[in-house]
Length: 529
Image (cartoon, rainbow, N blue to C red; front, side):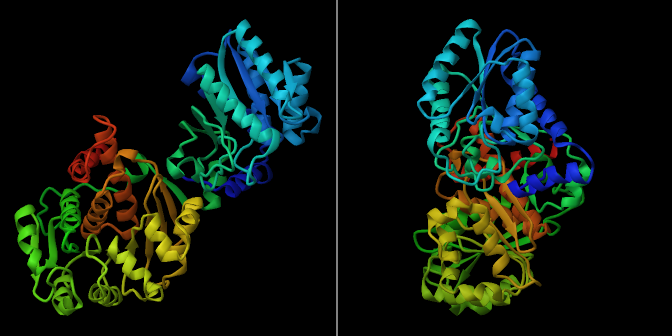
């Protein structure tokens, strides 16, 4: 599914009107009716129930006015709470305000924060006459860029408090008011929705940071022509079941271990052998045919005993951490491998950093860099663009901060911007670089301009080793012949889906190894979806 940044969604609205002759009033009518249909599908009919609609000063408020009209048409009792004088509305919203006035729909106007007390009294009376069905948040849509203040911020607090006290569901039109449609961050304060109905296309902010304020998200068609969407050539996509299932391919019946690729993993150091083992475990669970671990010689007995399905190569000149002294052997090992993973648990010793840079500059096959490899690379930022082949970087926000020179809070404030900058600004045109910024709503960005936001996963994944599992999974897909973008995107979604399957049994307390073990079931889910 395409994702549209807020400005892209506005451009699509304009294109529908200008290029295809669909009046904005029609799009607004379609949006309001579609939202109401989803409200009834989720919470039951509005007939003989009351609905409180908070109306903002722009087009989002117009959607709310359409909802109010159709609540009345379906036998419900709407109350319109305006956050702007009705006669100051413009365009299509003004048309709907005039219709609502002629229909004598009950209303009150919030001119200052103290007016909310009167609104609460009106709402209580409305609920007394007919039980409340829901509260509709139609204050601000995806175009909001400023921090909410004054009566607008007070209205959002009022909605959240009222819904919590009375246990009334909140429905947000397009986007919870106060939530940034681009970054998913609250602009001061945001409505806590139980149901969000996105009009036309979903936006990045619906999924970034796990969509904490969004509740259940439903995307509805409001009549924007498919031709307009196709012409826009939107670079953003949502990683969901249909999108990722289309990337998978059936395994040939006559396939053998050589058919499904050979992955080389450089990982592990004293005290961090578990990271290497989880990476290899996930690679094997991805369906990769062969996995070889190149490890410090002194630690080799641990790996041989712990994971018999993986091959190991003890590095003779690397005692307890991988060293540049073994570059020639490692280079020879990599020569016939389809892909390489470097980083989980390798440590940040200078001799390891020297090895990393040499391999980064000379390995022509796809290489995934994670964990300590990223911290070593951050010390030599100018070398990032000197890769000899495709690269996938999989930082968490702290590692991304090291790579970009930004603070972690700045990264989290606009995850998509940070990931796109790293992917697009530091790579030559002839070698694709992909950034996977991990976290709730993992972001995948390519130096070729594509980007995606993940929809799978849960907070049970907040456990040590989960990132190592992701590295092994993506590396295993690379070794099987997946293109770097496909491997990164599919790997991210499958990683989260495996955790979602575990969350059906318990919401927390599962381990990274259990996520790896659930990967085959995640593949089955996609193949049969």
